[in-house]
Amino acid sequence: MEEKKARLFSAVQPSGIPTIANYIGAIKNWVALQDSYECIYSIADLHTLTVRQVPAQLRQRTVELLALYLACGVDPNKSVMFVQSHVPQHAELAWILNTITYPGELARMTQYKDKSQRHADNVNMGLMDYPVLMAADILLYNAEVVPVGKDQKQHLEIARDLAVRFNNRYSPTFAVPEGIIPKVGANVMSLQDPMHKMSKSDANENAFISMADDKDTIIRKFKRAVTDSENSISFDENRPGISNLMTIYSVFTGLSFAEIESKFAGVGYGQFKIEVGEAVADLVCKIDAKKKEYLADKGYLEGVMAEGREKAYYMASKMLNKVYKKVGLYIPERKK
Ligand code: ATP
Ligand code: LTN
Image (cartoon, rainbow, N blue to C red; front, side, top):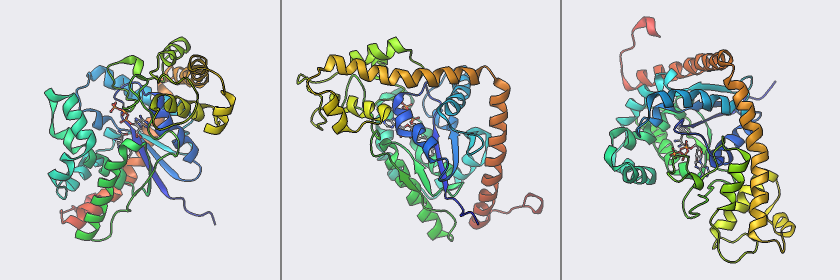
């Protein structure tokens, strides 16, 4: 008999055009994990509302993100793909989890502190509650594993704490999720400031490579990437600029750091940057072309969305019913 696969959940926010950091830290690994786990991949649209969005743009970015998942190789015959807001149980479970969450544990989150500074004119309850909604996403499906980049580690810790807290307060209900953080590429840095993570919402477009950039733009941005004055290609934590470029090159070519060092022995930064740009552009442009094909077939995208929603809704409503019962909410007979 076939062994039951462990459940896996992850999501990306449709808050902008994804960058190669989102691809390297998250989506690329999702594709590789599809055969080993029962995968559920969401588009976290509710999360994006924690910072100001342009409504029409958010709607468009939601379909674009689905097209990108497909173009990167997430396969609807293997994995469930759905839009978070299509399954209302996410927000409902978040409410229940809020009742066992302490404000202090949310106020100390790095992302909350960062984003409250960057969006000082819009520090809202949602921004603070972000990790609770994320915990609801994961716990609703009893996911055992969650592939994410390093920046999400703290949020995952809250999801684990809330699972344990709920299980102790009521009775064993939720699986306690484990993160899968990639060995290489868990923290891709900005091309303009290698001390900060690459982020799709960076105001400086030269800081990131978007998954929709064309070849010339990609090469130009890499040429401008901030490095040090040493000019030798070797991995060294004290030289974050060149080490970041090596990490990116390694992920896109499959070469190890040692292989990259010997391949580029005696070569200067200028030449290396062009080669990184070419390797990245090769794949990014292929993915972008596929994404455009999917986007041209709205009917197909809506079909994938509807099928994903149906599967996710079924799992989520079963779990939420169980939770409602445990906390003592009265469930009418016909809803059971
Ligand atoms: P925003 O700038 O809107 O906050 P973001 O670029 O940080 O967005 P998210 O949508 O928050 O991206 O993250 C999607 C996935 O990409 C997550 O798994 C996250 O860990 C991963 N990720 C984000 N930034 C990086 C990075 N710099 N390096 C590696 N992985 C990353
Ligand atoms: N907060 C995540 C996106 C996200 C997520 C999740 C990731 C929302 N819900 C559940 C993993 C599991 C981010 O990457 N910024």
